[in-house]
Structure formats: C-alpha cells, structure tokens
Length: 490
Image (cartoon, rainbow, N blue to C red; front, side):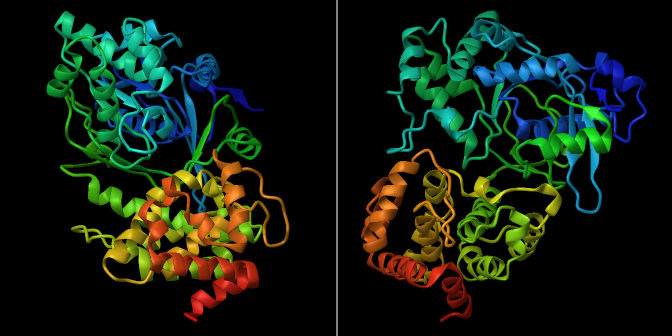
C-alpha cells in the first residue's frame, strides 16, 4: 500500500527510493524561486538536493514562491507533504526515484508576503521559471513591452506591485534602504539569453518608476545567463501510477524526467552562490555557445520530427524515432543544414551531441508526446528554425530541408493529418494559422506573408521557391512521398 508523502512517513517507510541523507533542520534559506513547476523541481531543485547530499551548501535551501493562481494550487499540493517532491528518472535501463528535500518553505501567494520574503538578508538569489510570456517581451521589437496592462498597473501602484518583476524591484529597494546587499536575479527559463531577457524586463520596468531604481539596479545587480536542459514530460495518470505502484508513494505533485541533465551558468553573482560545480553544473564566462548548440541541434531537432510525425498520426516521440522516414528526415536535415550552422565549441563534438539527442528522443520511458513538440510553433519557429534559414541564405547555401520543415509546419496547421484525423488547436494563434494554411494550399506564398513570423524571409525568392515546392509536394504527394524524395536527394 502506498504511503502519503511527508517527512514523518518518509522517515519510517521502507521504500525503494533514495531519501535525503541530510536533516531538514540543518537547512536554511538562501534562494527564493518563483514558479514551482515540474521543470524547476526536476532541474534546479534536484541539483541543490544533490549538493546538500554532499554535505555542502546547506544555507542555500529553496523557498518556493509565485504570483499566479496555479502557484497557489501547487503550494496547496506540496504543503501537506512538507514541500517534498518525488522525482522519477525515466531511464530505459531501469527507473529510479529520489525524494528531494531542497525546498523548505513556500511563501503565501500574496505580493506583500513575497516582497518581505525577498527582503530577508539571507536570500541571496531570486530565481525564476515564469515561462517566456512572463517577461513582457514586445513581439514586434523583441524589447520590453512598456505598454502591457500589467506593467502599466505596476507603475501606477509601485508600492503594491502585482507582477513578479515589480515585486523584485520593490524588494531590492527595501534591501537598499536597510543596507542589505542585493540578490542575484537568475532566470532558469528555457529561452535564449534568459539572463539578458530578465535584465531587460527588470530595467525596463524600473525605468518607468519615479525613483532611481533603474540606475541602482544597473550598477549593483547581476543577471547571469544560463542554459538549462532536461526533458520533463507533463504529469498524467501514467506518471502518477508509476510513482504510486512502482515506488509506493502517494505524491500530490510528482515529477518524472529523463536521466540527462545539463546546466551551464555564467559565473556572475551579486551576493555569492552555492558550489553547484560539485554536482555537475558548468560555470563559464559565456553561455552563448552552449545555448546555440542546444537551440539549433536539440530544439531544431524537436521541430524537425514534430510536424511530419503529427501528419503521420504518431503520438509519442519515441515512436516517431522508430519511423524510418521521420528518423531519416532528422538525420539528413541535421547533418546537411542544421549542424553546419553551429560553430565549434572547444571540447564539444557537435556530432556526438547530435548522437546523444537521438538517444534521448528515442527514450521510450520518457513518454514525451508529439503534440507537446508541435505546440506554439508561431513562437518556436522564429527562434529555432528561421535563424538557420537566414544564416544559410547569407552564406549562399541550400535551405531545401529547412524549407520543407517550415512547409510541414504550415501543412500541420491546416488542422488535419494526411489520414484526415482532426488536429486539435495547438498554438495560441491557431485560428490565424489555420486561415493562412488554407490560403496557402493554393498559394504557398500566403503563408510567408505572416511578416511577424517570417520577417524579410517572406520576400526572399530562394526560400520562397523552396518552401512553395515543398508545400505543393505535401499536398500533391503526401508526407510520406515528400519525405522519401527529400531523403533520397531527388
């Protein structure tokens, strides 16, 4: 019979899981993390747990926080189990589970409570996983969106802000008043130059205030960039059953993830940091090369397999990797067009990195889904695929494979698979994308007229011709025949 997870039950239960060897009472807070989702607990919280297991860093324990209603729901799930989380490593050679205890508290979901918690002198890092949409980035300029309603509201009520960034600024100003050193602001979101994005948001908001917070933060606060990587599937009945039936634990908010973890972090901190290098975190001067290889080979690879698999009615990523045409498309596009756009990194083999990607995508135990990879293409394509198109065109190189990938996305957004199965809405802009895809069936250029996505590529004749040929083939010959032709080089 499964036990309900808590410090008390964990202490007496005989379970086939790894338990914390450190005592909870030996930990003290050093980090407030905003956004206690699955990825954070599989990644940052897991790294800190492993550090505490070595006997180091016990003054860097996590305190959870949030500003949204779903943050409150997570707090209510974790509170009865003393903030513990069961993390299952989905290793195809044999699953294992670890109960991690690196989080010791969770701030009530209330802006003033969070400002007070961040003001405490022992808090030296405020870290974030608030998703890309939480950074108030202007979709047209890529800069700070000063006209966002939540930003305007915070600036009108700067003593009682509601956004996490308004709260951060208020806490930093209170720390300055009390003579306490500022904390580091550390984004752990999976987006390019996440530290720079966080910095732009904080400074953009501070610039609109009626004080000198902008200049003070600019001078005293660090925003390290980081590259984070660990496939963490959503939790459903399958995953909860694994935790309950295989490991004997009733966990209200378990986490499952692949056994691969990577965290590359700039060594730039305002007020100290935990010794995470002891548990495998790579501290570097410049994260950009590591981020570049991930964004192109991994994220670009995800996009490469997503849309053909979706059109072929394949649900799981590992099944897509078993399909000879999907795998063949991935292999050819990566080796011919994607990997050559990635600069060499000292002591890192791009080819070995790709081989590892193939292994990770093929992990059946992860149970990752094609709909997840297809989600939000209107945001992901301009970040992961189109920059490679631009680079190759500037170098006078072929973009046939990348144009085919983009055409597959267009065909997917039509809303039916090759077999006629309805594809459920899978993008915040789904209605618009569906309209454009239907127009593009007869006139492919209509798809490229979405200038906010394709930019100057919409008027590039070489890309437009390659895209049109690919989309016409998908409609006339189908996904299978089009992939076969590309893989053969015909």
